[in-house]
Length: 320
Image (tube, rainbow, N blue to C red; front, side, top):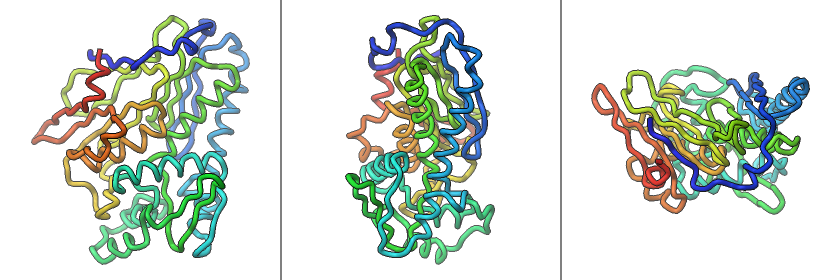
């Protein structure tokens, strides 16, 4: 068993630990499942906490769902050419980080490829015939983060006309962060939150251990297990083992051909880990564009009937 340790222990997050009871809650959101573990002395109050978590997630869906026709995102996608749209705070936070990662990665992560996603049959329209080169080029001409303008101070996003957002590569990570922040606001500082496989750990378990999370290994891949101590950290994954052949390289409009099966990224927030995992899955093996971010990533690459594991240097430093 290989152990990934946090770069530091936050004394403020460890002090005055909560009592020994751990409550587990769960439900559905964003076409997947959510799960929360938190330490508390008020076990009877868990039902109310679960309803509050679900309400928070439902609000995020109402803002950023690519599938809900009445979401803020869908309304932006239909908005008139040359119009500015004011975004609610959650949506604004996701766009701000998404555009930052898009610029850093040269568009390997791109929040504005809704038409390409639909064209390949991964959106609300459901399965589609494999597109030809002309259809892909047409979708690409109306896609891409560079078409957008973002006024961070006013939380205003400009629709040039015909650009469709798709935040499926970042929204679940943000949702995990948002739920952890909400729990902290309720007084529950020690928790583990998962939304669709993206996880964030805050504080410690009542027994003094961190929140341990084992990185998933795709079926048929024989590798030593890797366990992460999620203390004030998050982990998110991307790859064909979880999404099927759903990955797209926004720069070409086609699925990547680099053989990447799975990527896990560890970062301070699940939102950032989520977006970076998508970028790494597209950019590998040349990750030089992401060097300023010091990305801690485990990458599994198909090699014949097996897989090769590649660990970035920042992740190697975290291995205990």
